[in-house]
Amino acid sequence: MKRLALSLCLLGLMAPGALASAKPLTLEAAIQRALASHPDAVMAEARTKVADLAIGDAQSQRVQVTTDVSFLNRTSQSQAFGSTPAPTNANPNQTSYNGTVGLTVPVFTGFKLSNSVLAAERNRDAASAQANATRADLTLQVTRAFWTLRKAELIEDVQQTAIEQTERTLKLTRTGFQLGRQTISDVDRAEVGVLNAKGAHLQYRESTEEARLQLASLVGLSAQELEIDGEPETLKSALQEPAEADLLERLGKRPEIQAADARRAAAQASVAAARGDLWPQLSAIGTYQLGNNPYNPISGARDAGTGALGTADLRLAANFNVWDGGRTARAIARAEADLAQAEAELEKTRRSIRQEIDLAVVRVKGARERLAITERSDGIAAKTLKWVEARYQQGYSPQVEVNEALGSLVTARTQRVQALVDLEVARAELARALGTL
Image (cartoon, rainbow, N blue to C red; front, side, top):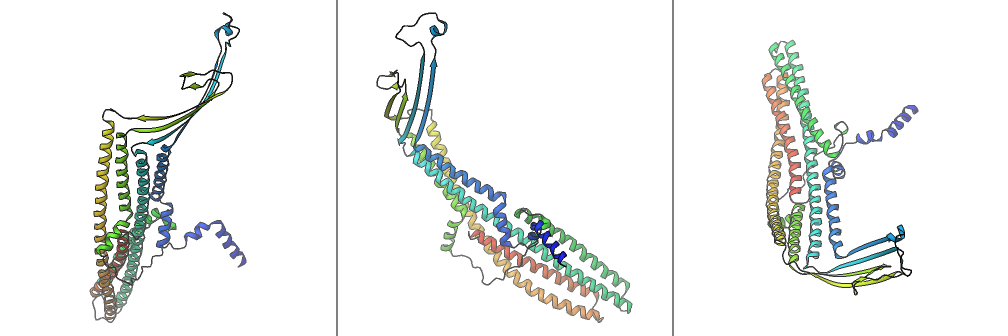
C-alpha cells in the first residue's frame, strides 16, 4: 500500500499538468484563461503599447538636440612629394577638428505641436478602450462556447436517459411476448426504438465534441484535457429593461463608444494640427562649436588657431509657407475627411449598441418565458411516462402510447435544456450590451 501511495505521488510530481487538467473548468476560469493567452487579447494589448509610444514621439518634437563631430587631416602635396619648399613660417600640413551641439526649441507652431500630442493621446485612449472592447468580446465568445458545450452535454444526457428508457421498454416487451401478451412485431418495434435512440445519441455526441473543440481553442487547451463545470445559475431577480436615462449613461460606458469618441477627438486634434502649417513657425536655435577651426558667424569665416576655440550662437528663426503646391490644403482636407468619418463611426456605434441592448432584452424575456413553460412540460411529461409505462406493464396501454410518452419527455427535457442555456447566454449578451460584462 505504501509503495502504491509513493508511486501515485511520483506520478503527480512528474505530470502536474495532467492532474491540474482533471479539475473541471468553471466559466470564470475559462474566461481568465482566454483573456490571458488568446491572440486577440495579446494583440489588443500590443496595439495599446504602440499607441502609447506614439505619444512619446509627438512629445519629442518639443526639443531637438543635434550633434556633429568632424576631423580633418590634410597633408600638403609639397610635403608629400618634396616639389616646392614650403615657407618657413607656414605649416604645410593641416589638421582640424570640430564638435557642434545644436538645440532647437519650437516657440510657436500655430498649435501644431500641442495638437499633435493631443491627437496621439486620444489615439492611445482609443486603443485602450478598444482593448477593453476586445476583452469583452472575448469574454462573450467564451461564455457562448461554454454554455453551448454545456447544452450539448445536457442534451446528450437526456438522450442517454432515452436509451435507458427504450431498453427498459424492450425488456418489458420481451417479457410480454413470453407471456403471450405481445407479438414479435411489438418486440421488433421496441428494438427499433432502442436503435433510433442510440443513433440520436451518437449525433448529439458529435455536437458535443464540436462544441468542446471550439471552447478548447478559445482557452488554449486540447479537447482531450478540457472538462467543464457548468451548473446553470438560479435567477433570483428578473432583469428589467433599463430606463432611458440609465440607458444613455450605460451607452457612454461601452468601450466601443469610448474608443469611437476618442478617435473622433484625435481626428479633431489632427485637423487643428494640420491647420498649424498656415501659421508662421518660430523656433529658437542655439549652437555651440568647439575645435581648432570653428566657424565664426560674426566674421562669416572659420577662425584658425593653434588651440581649441569655442563659439556660441543663439538665434530666432521664422519660417512661413508661402506656396507649397497645395500640400497644406490637401493635408487639411484629408484631416477633415477623417474627422467626418470618425463622427459617422461614432453615431453608427451608438445605433448598433442601442440595437444590441434592445435585442438582448427581448432574448432574455423570451428565454425566461420558454424556461418556465418547459419546466412545467418536463414535469408533466415525466409523470405521464411513468403512468403509461405502468399501464403498459399491466397490459392496458399499447406500445405506441409508451413511445409517444417517451418522445414527449425527451422533447420537453431537450427544450428545457435549450431554454436554460439560452437564458444564460442571453443574460451574458445583455451584460455585454450594457457594458457590464
